[in-house]
Amino acid sequence: MGRRVANTQFLGALLAADPFDEYHFFLAGERECTEFRQAVASHFPGHTEHIKALPRKGLPAALAENRYHVFHLSDCITHQAQLSRLRNLHAPELFPITGVTHSLSYPNYGQAFLAHLWPGTTPRDCIVATSRTGVQVVEGFFGYLRRGYGLDATRFPQPSIRRIPLAVTPEDLVPASPEEKIEARARLGLTPERTLFLVFGRLSHYSKMDLLPLLRALKRCVVQGMDPASFSLVLAGWVEDGENYHEAVTGLATTLGLDVRVFARPDEAQKADLYHAADVFVSIADNPQETFGITILEAQSAGLAVVASEYDGYRDLVDSGTNGLLVPTLCAAQTPEVDPMARLLFDSDSHLSLAQETVVEVGPLAEALLALHRSPELRLTLGRKARQDIEERYSWSRIIDQYIALWDELWRLPAERVQVAHPMELPYGEVFGHYTTTTLSDELSVSATAYGLRVYRNEELPIIYPGIAGRVTAQGLRKLLFAARKPVSVIDLTTQVSGMLADAGSEAVRGMILWALKHDLLQREES
Image (cartoon, rainbow, N blue to C red; front, side, top):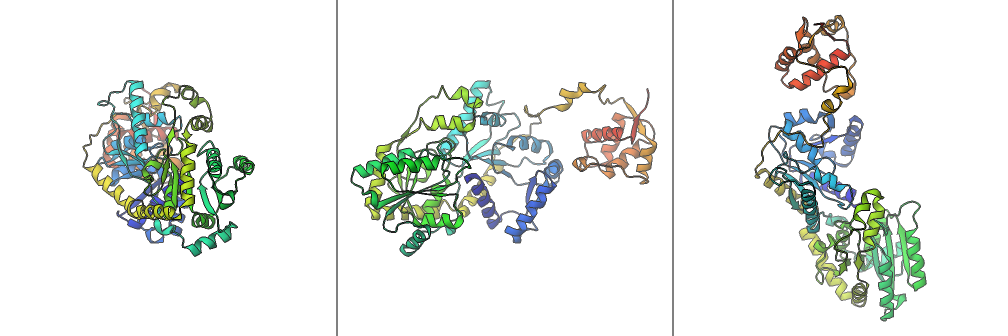
């Protein structure tokens, strides 16, 4: 998956630049923390001392204790708005929180972007779109949601939006010499004399691109005089278990008299050979699930001429006639049949419906393929410029510099701390408080039980489940039980213990009182 590759490479590049004193990763639980520490020791042995893997339940305490420069998330969908709320509650300074866009077309993402529109959002909260078209999509989400829900921009601010592209590591994939090209083709079993057109990515008509128009374009090339024995089309990439789309494509290719080879799920060595063996890289994305196009960058890093659909983020990466060729596209301005059904269908169904009404024009596609087939010089010129662009604009080292500059810029933006609950934050006490006979009141009188006093004297140890160990501590219990040696009201007990525990607010103490009542360390005094 492009998203996983991009996130992994981002992390590696950030640690290579190493701009910060420490890096804190808040993971789901202790098992994930252990696995992460092992991975860091294996892949980044020089960073084990200043990379901390912390359980996510410790976020409130960590936010209060540390002065963070930035929280950066691998996506803007899952947790960004909720982290802003937590930061507003606990952090001494309102540091920036940034999250990245990947695929943007899933029908439930409106709900995710709605979460960003709330009074606690500040301009220091930033969504990083990887393409210009991605910026427009995020702005489109916010505009549509504001109109639909009647949300005023003053009362319900949105995060900042900035564009920073994805990247590659140019040293990982370099242009092949003529000898290396011949050797790569030999390892792959491909004919050395032919022009080789390469498609690399998910081989799927519903989540990447429909390849049938490419076959029709190649057939047009044959009609216009391109010898079918002078070229091959190579399809490589991920194939889902049980899917036979690539077989349907090769079946049609045979009928049309075209030579098509398929490399399903190639490993890294095969992937490098495929890029080195190719003459032209082709990607005719027609699916809104595609947002950026990391394979375009990989092909350009390998010095390949690129033929791409003029679609989504591809338009940022390919300057037609300079470092590749773009093929015009068109689609419907409105999609009234798809829109109301999208949330009721599988994502693949709605994506397929949209993609089948997105046209990559076959005529111009054929012209681009034919031009590059006939002119090795043009292929070489476009490929050299593409490689130069990678080195100057799309290497991870340069992209990390852009992130560091962005984080510094966000600190300079105004930010006001607004303490208001997030509307998607479920108030459990308010909603479920009627489940019990009564709720904890300030006037309730409590006192330590005989068992509680034994715990206070360290004669017995209570069982504290790991899941709440950060909320109920031995030190906190001793303070609580000391203050409750004689009957005391909940409000007075809360005030006393909060004063004795610097890191525990009144709500935390009330939670500990309830826990102590539950486990017979405290008891209610009859009024």
